[in-house]
Length: 229
Image (cartoon, rainbow, N blue to C red):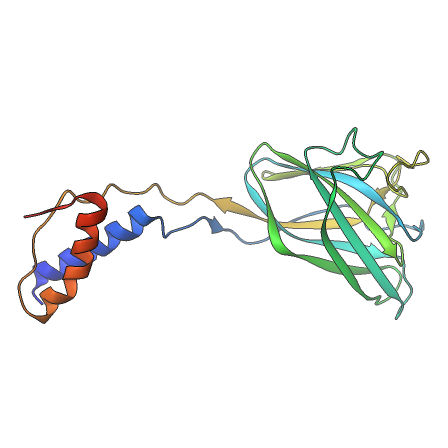
């Protein structure tokens, strides 16, 4: 195949990749937002806490790290609920909430941190908020008691950690205790905009190399009405 035909092949392939959108969004490395570690206060089975995550830039939530109250070698089960929008006004009932992820295991000690990887990362678009409720169904959870609700933020993500030691429709929530947890996320970079398809492609030389190009040229003609020069 001649040099001119090599350039043609590269140009056609690049055009097909760009127009078909084969290059998707790119995830950056993981970043983390963390609350203070738990202090001497403990949680009990079936209770948890509410928190919101607001994306400053579009992010993928990949995992959460939390502290169980289960003693070493004792079982625990953690359930993570979510809903679109902030949790304010929606904590009195489980209606509108769905289980995003559950994790069962054996505790490494009390307190011990455990990692809940999301089976499918949760994408939060820039400017959007998702409400969460994390509950220690078995083994309980740990929280910190620094005297006020926790607000964490960096350039990509903001977290508001609200009351703990609470269940849905629980009027005895302690608004001065917050879950001790970390949120691991990655930012999502938009792919480059697609390039317009070529308006004219010269036919390659005959021979085996030229024949190999014909399926690509036929696709270009059918899909975009490319003119053969």
